[in-house]
Every structure is written in C-alpha cells, then in structure tokens.
Image 1: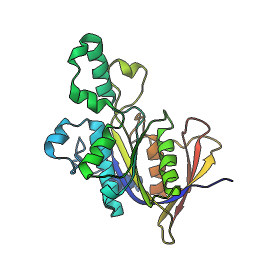
Image 2 (image 1 turned 120 degrees about the vertical axis):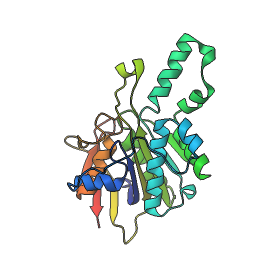
Image 3 (image 1 turned 30 degrees about the vertical axis):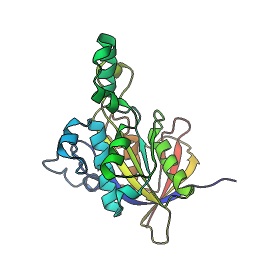
Length: 259
C-alpha cells in the first residue's frame, strides 16, 4: 500500500542577505524592489541580546525563520514538534574546532564545541521557546531539505497536528571550503499542518521525480547549500503547481495546490 504524504502550509519564514522575510521574497518574485535597509545579520527576538551576540549565525538564521513561520501561522512555538534540517551545520565553527585540535587540543573552546553539534539550532530553539515537544536534527547531503520535508510530513501522518520544519545553512570557511561548498546565509521555515477543507496552500509528496530538478532562483541564496528550499518557495510565490527537488537519488516530486 502506498501512502501519499500531504499537508497544508500554514506559515512561512525566510531570511537571506537583503531578503529578511517571506514577504520580501514574494514581493521580489512579483517584480517589486528589494527592501531598503535590510539587516545584515538575523536577530531573532526570542533570544536575549547577550545570547544573540554569542550564538552562531547559522543558529540565528534558523531561529529567525522559525519564529517568523510560527508568527505567520498564529501558532505557539512551544506547542510544535520541530525538524531542523542543515546540510553542514556551522562550518565556521567546525573549521575553528578542527584547527584548534590540530594546533593545541587542550585549547578547544567549550562554547565553540557546544555550538559545533548538529542539533545546536534545535537546542537554542527549545531553550528559547520553552518547547518540550520532540525536536529532530537531520542532515542528508544535497537532499537535506527534501528529507527534512519527508520527515515533517511523516510526523503529521503519524499523528502530529502541526510540525515546524526549519532548513538552514551558512558559508564554508578555511580548508573545509576546498571540499564543502556553501556560500552566504539562508534560513527557511514552514509550519505544516494536517490538510483541512479551507486550506489556502497544500503540499503533496508525489514520489520520485522525472526529468530535471527544479533550479532555485539565481538572485537569492545563490551558492548556499540550502538553496534547494528556495525552489519550493518560488513555486509557492508564483503559483506553480509542482517542483522536483534534489533528494540524493532521482529527485523528489512535490505537488502544490493553491486555494
């Protein structure tokens, strides 16, 4: 028996350099000008100022997008199970920890070490929101966003009423940049809920895709390891009925129904 995983999208969050919100992204797709004076660094309000200064940029962008998606959905963040998807985690911190281990192993910073773990963003989120719901951290190479989406929809199928999906990546630095490729900072979040009668936007996983993958927009998030997520958001913004996303195999075909 084959089960088609479906959901309604209740809220969207986004942060990219020069594009600080989903509304700004959608406006750009409609041909509107880029927002003026966009912040150069995400600053999620749920973190106190001292925590914002210490937290890695990858954590900040993940939390900024997650908070925006919850606000758009009108959902209490603490009430949502969450899936945090990142291809590489924070490469700048990983590079620093590796360099310190090679040079002076006893000098590894405890703060940098605890920020180097892949579930760092999920940890900041659950602490900042007081969430006691399950939080999942996932990485699946170039198919990370697609697999995060599959995981979130699977949790809905398993009984959750709503799930927060957060996808993010940052730039590669140091020697790691020779083997891992990611530029800039990007965070995308979706609040996914069980389909209902009055949904404005539905998403369905249709299985392996055929033909070529849907390219993300070239003007936003270019080179970021999570840019695949923007291919889906562009389809939502432009009313497209389907996309095929990189899933590490044949491509994941996703259908969209716009109400």
